Image (cartoon, rainbow, N blue to C red; front, top):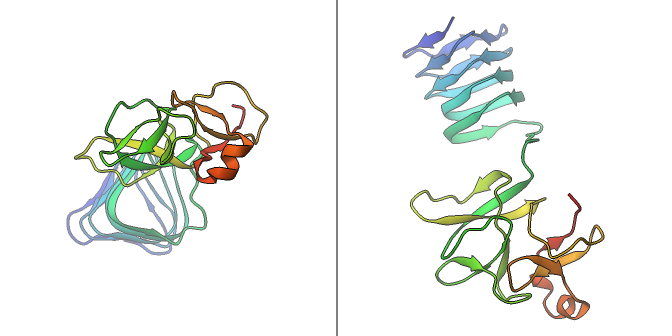
Length: 203
């Protein structure tokens, strides 16, 4: 059955907290053991939890402080901090993206340059101010502004991209005039090392 408190919070020191349905409170949640629920809804903090295991969402939390793991969560929504984790795992997606203002067409997997108006598709080989590849496979995104038109640019990890042909793994790549990836030449690498976008990895 659900555990719902309107004001005082939820406390289960040493025993953990378990609910078959949603668990919610306008105060905080303090558990020395595990917390198990379909959804967690609260405006306070979660402290002292060994593990949080759930199949739904974690919403409205100011801060999460714990020594264990969060697993099975669809979404975590809040304005506070997540601290005390040994590791944070994200096995579903491939890369981390930084959202940039978009001035032109959005084509995932293509290379973009930075302009005064925003990011646009590359139109010249090894182009100046190339910033990276538009990603639709990111597991973490930063800098998103819902009020503007943006493109997520991969800044770390492995990203799916258009390539002009197959290369040996580790081949350094730059952009071509169509926004695809292509092998960078020795001269380009010597003169414009900042225009190396990434290295080739066979999917």
